[in-house]
Amino acid sequence: MGEVRIGANTVLPAVREAVTLVTADGVRLVGEFSLPVDGEVRGVVVLLHPLPTHGGMMDSHLLRKAAWRLPALAGLGVLRFNTRGTASAAGRSEGAFDHAVGERFDVAAAVDFVVGRGFSPVWLVGWSFGTDLALMHGCRDEVAGAVLISPPLRWSTAAHLRAWVGRRVVCLVPEFDDYLPPVDARRRFGVDLPTADVVEFAGARHLMVGQSDEVLDAVVSAVLPEVSTPLPRTWSGPCEQRQVVIGTP
Image (tube, rainbow, N blue to C red; front, side, top):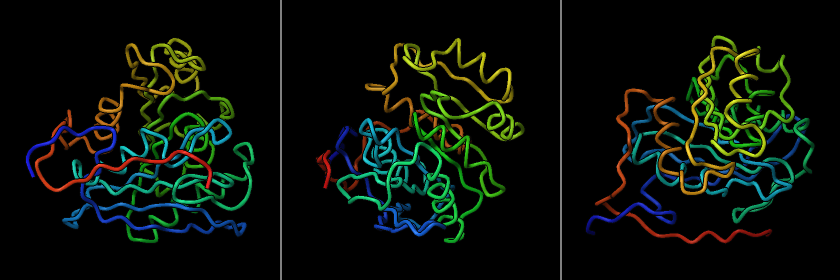
């Protein structure tokens, strides 16, 4: 196969496994765990999706691109899953949306799964609602840090932010975010989590449409600073093109 441009529907090689996460309160969550095909795993990220009541799921565009690209391009293992009550092409997780409360069990089950497979420490990568889940429920000894994409800080309190002081936290904030623009993000994090790096994404809005390449570069730079970025934009090995059906099974 000749060299191809890595686009929105390009799926690069990985060992992909459909998984079921079982929470401490007995809820079964639909997920997928992807690892590099060569067996060398430089690190593992757990992806936390946007608000499911507004269409967020494990197939949300930044998360599926991370799962489809980062095992091959960066040697990262990637766990993505649907929080309770959330549906995607892979299926619907049991339970019901719980306004970031019951989802604490979902975050714990995801981290426990990765650690149980022998990977530690892990990183959390949250997007929108997923950033609140990371900040509220992800500060554990096994978690090295977090990348927060478009953090709205809707449910996160000052106490949640303070718990992360001393850990690596990188905030990717769109210039034109409707929920927490850069000036407000710098103020909120500056007061309660001054060790966080707030990175402004020029020209971007909350959904980061058109910014996927740069977002994935920033995730890799935070988690694996030894990996050169920008990541390759083309691929010369085997790959496939996959169209994701966004809907409710």
